[in-house]
Picture 1: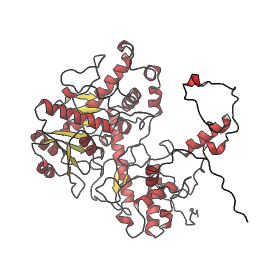
Picture 2 (picture 1 turned 180 degrees about the vertical axis):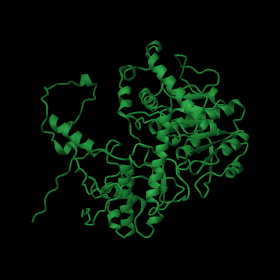
Picture 3 (picture 1 turned 90 degrees about the vertical axis):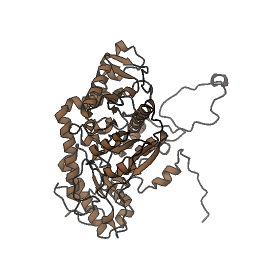
Length: 511
């Protein structure tokens, strides 16, 4: 019988894996300053005399105090650091509402083609026709998947896309003499960036409460509508992992009141190829390419959050955009003008279109269905021990649990998440959405196999059983295997130590 790190036997679940990993994480890696010293250098450099005239009085007044390392020492240091990173290539990310899916290497290969990787935004248009064609195709398929009339590719991320869509709504209402509309309705189940975006653009935010089943009531929306309402910002599927059943009725009510329907499309991965948001009545929706079409989160720089627009908002799309092989750079008519420098993130465009073309329409729909299947499988395996806030209904892309199953154990959601690190798993999303107390939000995505999900569920069930058995010390002290053990994230964020200080050698007390 196997024993875990606290001497308890470890069982095996349906996957055949032990329910706890029992493996120690890599040891802590010291800083470069602690590996090397300032008295030696790994390379031979000639002595250089630099006069004050050369640097204009900005020459260094003290020693540079950098540690000298040999090339093998430096290389090994950074390789060891890289092994401390958790990544989608090393394990599952159960983060809810984040869609950390696998990034196919084919996408990376295409993004590195010289014709895409080496172009410059100031090149003559005649020399970048291939890139413009790719942007045109990407925009076409985004509009096809959503059944919308226009697309703005340039927004750099989801929140930037939200701002673009809401700016288009504001421009449309100003053009129609409706600039008095200053209220935006935001359901409690929306993403947190929604009210922030509305407030940033000068709107007043009015919250719409969630029903007992986690969805938005059309009657609650109707009662909040008035001649001063500019739009509703609704996330669908919402952050409880549920598809809004009355979304069409909500859209109709909003339009009847002269307002617009902004849909947060961050969770489009759950419905791509299956549901077209335009058919539901949306006017604007951003799409996170990193969440739906497998581009990396940020990709080492800005991401991409294209916005699709309805026919009513199409005239207010920002520039630049591609039209018949030309890049329209200047505002025409009622266009917003430019919301970002140049033309967006070419590398993200290439990766997203590669993903689309390699899957096809049926493959994208299958990916969405598999994401929903995986989330419901996790829910089905965990719900007899974990507490489900909205029972009796299937979920979409993510399974939501609350902390009521931990009542009386002296273990919090944070403690539970810390213990997951000791078992080799990245924690799930904690305390979000806010409509559920002590929320644990899990999104397996379509990338994970049943074998991986079973191993994850085995560990989650073993942890929950141990917490309910009264072994709170395992959780409140976790993680014990991570190099830095348990961190105080709040203090680290508020009082970060940004500079290494050489330890002071204190005199030893006389015996």
